Image (cartoon, rainbow, N blue to C red; front, side, top):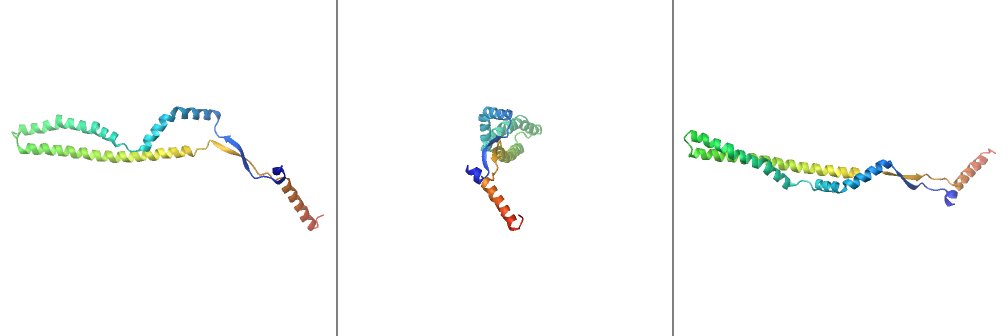
Length: 174
């Protein structure tokens, strides 16, 4: 009775689902099916840079093949050149072998530093991307409030009408 007589402020009386039933069903089933794998992937992304994986890749993908090529092709080639020149036991051969080993080591070190920097940068980008996705999901609306607008009430209407009549009377409008 108070709202009818005095009026009321706007108030929320419910929620409107912004998704169709099919969208709600799809979202629910997708979240249920992917929750565990998604959580694991997200935690990996948020964990960022994994130096162990990068070092494993570096060892197996760069160092091992480079050392195999060096031992099977480069060293025998250098040794054969010096043997052919009758300098198979010279200090020049030892210096050439040491220089080639130093060059290989320097090259691998340069590749490692580049990989480490790239890995750290990629880890940071992955973290930012994961956080961005989380924030966009958190901000997505699936419901809107249903708001009942303000009601003026009888008393307000009566007072307004009475005020208009009084003003008209004072102006001599009767």
